[in-house]
View 1 (cartoon, helix red, strand yellow):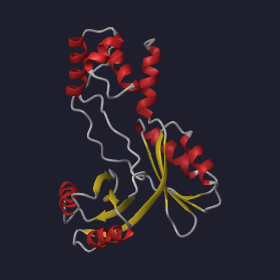
View 2 (view 1 turned 45 degrees about the vertical axis):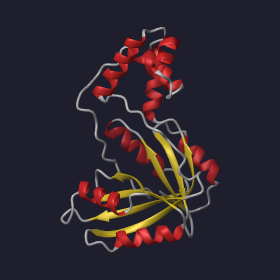
View 3 (view 1 turned 135 degrees about the vertical axis):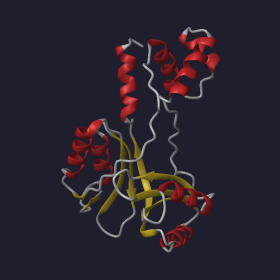
Length: 238
């Protein structure tokens, strides 16, 4: 998303974060105006359309490029029972809580906690993810927007190539489900390393073009899935 640069960045980021589907905002270094990477979650095409309209309707916004991301969902379903929710409530408070601690806090037997965790893990209906601040460790966080040629390479092979070529600096891929575009995230020591990575990607035969995006600040908000879980806990009286 790009803007005309007239916005107060902190206020603008807070305004975007008030939208329930927004979970993460990164501010990008640009020569003029403003630019942002925005991550979110949605359910159904209507919510996605409303999200695009919301972002595009903000006063300083000039352009919005929306990419639904490839997400490998679970192959099975599991109805979350009150038992599962009692365990999830503990993990929501402390994701590092041990089985014995969950049992003590929830009043459940350790074997019952273990069974509930196994059911959720096997069904893949619940995912556990860390949300580190990658720009906080004295290194540079960059995203390389890669437009790749699907006639020359499969997306799985492209990701494998990135892992093999940049085993230390390559962090994660954000794969567009609507276009042949990948936002490849890297952690580098300085901008010279970023330039070296970008050049190597740019001059490969299966890449049409690439643009380096430098992140210099970010803000995190509860993702939609977190808000939905909180609603389920409240409805269950937990």
